[in-house]
Length: 448
Image (cartoon, rainbow, N blue to C red):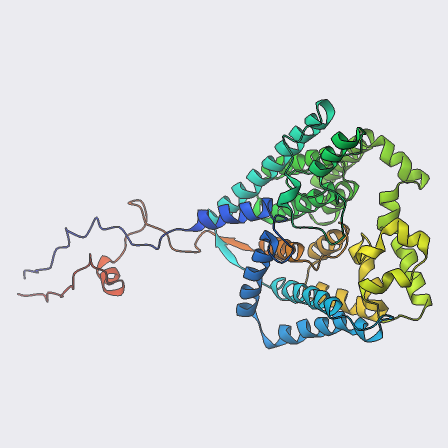
């Protein structure tokens, strides 16, 4: 018997086709957006709002009837306070609440998303967060040196690039603007590094997001993860952001489940970090212990007093932020700047703006189907200057939660096969994947 077969010598070297890899383009664009998230002409025409628009599109694609109902319940809770406002109905105030409701809705839906990435994507995301962290660390170090030596504007982002604040006039908290104020008036003000963001506290929030994401993306790389955390610690120490320092310590203590030996190491590192923070920020620590640090009072003490004063007046279902100035004492108003719309503590604002019942319900919805590390992250995110229901913060928190929950699979995604890979049935490949390079193949039956 003689068997005749068709030879495929002309196609044995043909590589398996794969789609164009745009992974690095997406990663690079994401990094650029994180660095410039606060840049823009207005709040609605900014990098943050553009990212939020993309998040909204993705949210609509992931929507299910269950989460549609849960999200709409949260929207109702955000709008209810307008029915009991001590002021006349305001369309602008309603628009602001609807914007917050949209951010809440996006957060609620995207926190349930679980994506699977290839190990190649994991490596890319890992490199991306490393580049971001190193960039923030280097910029903060340059700004710290500049503030110590020359107090120029060389390493600070120009004030004009930031979207205008919600409060009228003034420098807001942008370092470059305060440096110009110093030069114009011949005085010195307290300025701290803030990298590419409007204030040190926001930089602390970004670092917190990166540390949280690193717990999953850098999983299995203990040395790399420790080095990453060390860079994060150095960055928040340079910025002297109390909220950032405390948040990272809490993140290390409560969001990891290592072995007893690693737990002891983490506790030791946290203690050393806290000691270093105490030395670097000795004046602030002393003021906090004495109860005279205004930033600490405005973030924790006075907001609690504002809640009690609002409840005493019977507003158990919350009150629009535009009306807070009429319900709290002048002392609390001056200390917390509630005239801007809310306190600097997002967790307390839940009960201040949406009432006891509304605040509890909204937190329950936010924490629904979240693990303990994610709940800790959400609570910590609320400690950075007010609401998390803004375009930029809702987008960054959602992205952080998605990456923290992501799975990384070596077999996920299509990839080209090398000569060392297992053999493939190229005849089936050519049939299943027609292209202009593949010719129709006809089987040749065996002949005697």
